[in-house]
Amino acid sequence: MNKELLNAIAYLSKEKGVSSDVICDSLEAVLITAYKKEPDANPTAEVTLNRTTGDYQIQAAKTVVDDVEDENIEISLDKARLIDPGYEVGDIVNVDVTPANFGRIAAQAAKQVMIQRLREAERNIVYDEFSDRMDDIITGIIQRIENKSVYVDLGKAEAILPASEQIPTETYTVGQRIKCYVVEVRKTTKGAQILVSRTHPGLLKRLFELEVPEIYEGVVELKSVAREPGRRSKVAVYSRDENVDSVGACVGPKGVRVQNIVSELQNEKIDIVKWDEDPAVYIANALSPAQVISVTVDEAEKSSGVVVPDYQLSLAIGKAGQNARLAAKLTNWKIDIKSESQAAESFDDDAPEAAEADDMDVLSEMALPSDDDTTVPTEGE
Image (tube, rainbow, N blue to C red; front, side, top):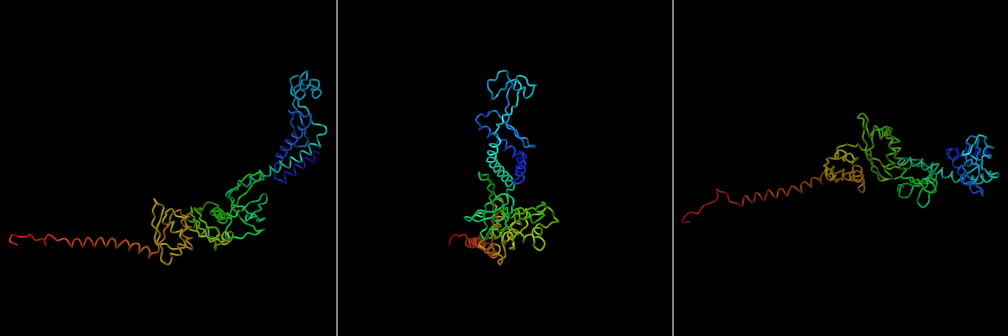
């Protein structure tokens, strides 16, 4: 039986990924609990499990006395010396109190409680593993779809992709392999609950880190991400090495790197722009692919005015204002876009007011007589 016990511990440790020490600690707790349910159980007893041989023994510490008053905590000198002739009064003796029929009872109790302890240990292991992967990407296979929520099999655990975190333009099917962003890991009575997202900007950031070695190595820094999931995204990048083109590194040879990300996000369009410490330059870059004539910035209000060619106005604003909206999110600046002709009209609207004021001054001067024109009446006139 002892060999079978050791084999069972080794199997559970390997199969469930639980340390053998954890299993042995659980088994000791189970055995002492089962023992204390016995009618004549010693309340001070403890169990010792030999982790090499698999032998277990329930022992109670008793004090050696001449006259025994409480058998649970005391042992006579004569009985103590049967165990070891060297014991004297006052010594502490560990006495074997394992019941004769305890093997069958222990096995039954161990089986029931061990299953529970192992499940708890497994849940803790899963929680610890995935809590360390917060704000990271995980790959899984869609297992089922219920009430608009997608359940993703991660191997050791199951993740939930709720409807609010799904890309509106995507269709999910059972058996499909997808990459998700770990938003939250909760510890519940049923185990770790893993919440994942396909819409989080962090997903796009992590995908770039996977595809672009320069970002992973820290040569190129991804400064900001703005995203409208399934439709379009903008990312701002900056190179710490002047010999490395930040945009070119992200695009990759023949656009392979960015195309891999686009494919993973089901053809979501991605604009890669160069970050700049000058807000005016950064804002102009953020409005790509539109061309910009000029940018004025108000640092105090964190707002800017942008002028673009007439034929570029619709491109700068984008469909339903998407390009301008994403540029504002990316830069964290308010952006007011005008075409060249609109800007000129605004200037002309201000110019007449100045002209009218000048004209009034001229008219006033004409209405007033000059000193030379003034006549002084003489007597007789």
